[in-house]
Image (cartoon, rainbow, N blue to C red; front, side):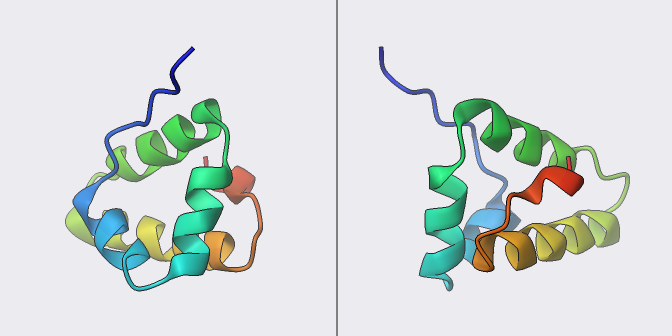
Length: 71
């Protein structure tokens, strides 16, 4: 079965492009965890909140932590 990759928000993808560690962390998550993280970011009520959520996710992904507390 082919793995479905969620549509990653542009802001997150842009930030991950500068951090191989975070990108590896994101793509090592299971499909459900990736979708939950994307949903968490997309659920922000403002641009500032989305940016804050992206920063939280980046911090967790760069330190090889599951962003479970984020979503």
